[in-house]
Length: 57
Image (cartoon, one colour):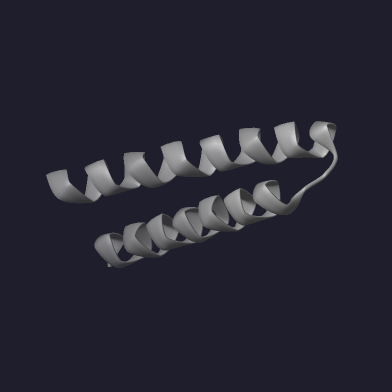
């Protein structure tokens, strides 16, 4: 059950990472672009952390 929840969190963060990356590419405002970049970096790091965590289990 724990592995199922971890996989769900992984895919959520991966989705959010890709979503923010796409929004960032189409964004014209530099301020918003930098905020989206920060969000994308956060979600990518969480996805990598969860992938590593599920590999250990």
